[in-house]
Image (cartoon, rainbow over all chains, first blue to last red; front, side, top):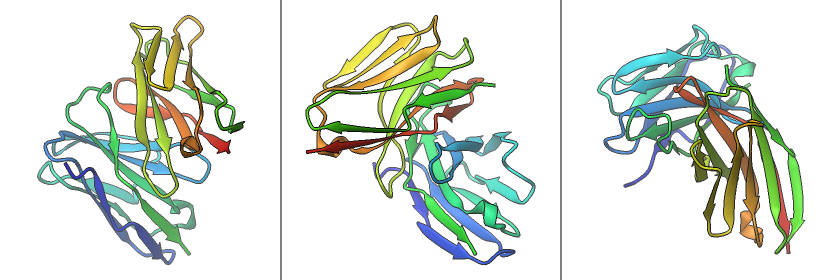
Length: 115
Length: 111
């Protein structure tokens, strides 16, 4: 078990550019979550997948954001036309089943800085 | 939707003292309450959780208590050590989908 991995760990981009992050969940984990965390705040839910199906999106997920989990394994989160307000840590978590009481295992996060 | 409030935002204790962090939640239907520890540069890690059918759970120096009537739950750390220094988050589920987190408590344990 290698844990949840995220790539890249850090990303610096200029306003208006597109960025894509990748999350590899723990093997055989069916549910995958994306959260955003800004300085001094707790993680905020963005979206989640059950296998390859995206089941819920937060209102925080504007239409510039898109997430995919094409084969039910790894997931990508893309932000188009980045804004300075997008600067944050983007966290991925996975659980083995669809139960909300299952432990969510978090990755180390991708820190995005938009200049 | 669920709302979680966490206090205090910062907590400083001497090594060996106890630390208590409290959270309140709004949705009386919530039935699962995890606590996460986040160290610098890392993602949150679950340290203990409690389900609504019990009032207290212990794991070595860490305990969580739940008061469903008052809709609050607390994390208790005894015999604190410098390695307990981190940011701690409480959470509660929103409509059985994702977790809603508190704003965090920065715990500093000085030796």
